[in-house]
Image (cartoon, rainbow, N blue to C red; front, side, top):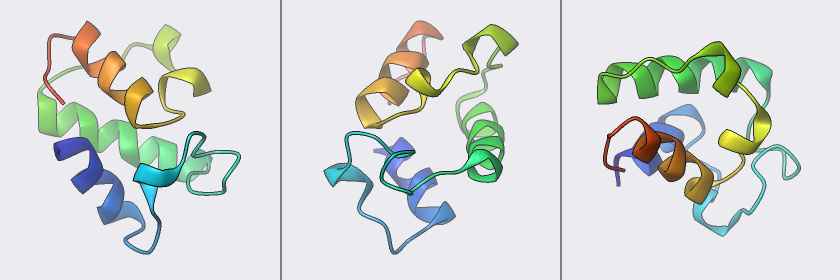
Length: 75
């Protein structure tokens, strides 16, 4: 799963698969989110619009997969 690989590049010590809320669990902060968005846009050839920059779209693996699906990109 490319999403998981990107997340692991940010913090390889974290278990993103076990988390239902990356922010509440301390796995992502605002700086990480900026890096994650840039990596997702680059890896999937998409542009994430400003109105999509809400925590719910980045909260866990399922939310990220749904965001990518809305852009026609497979997870």
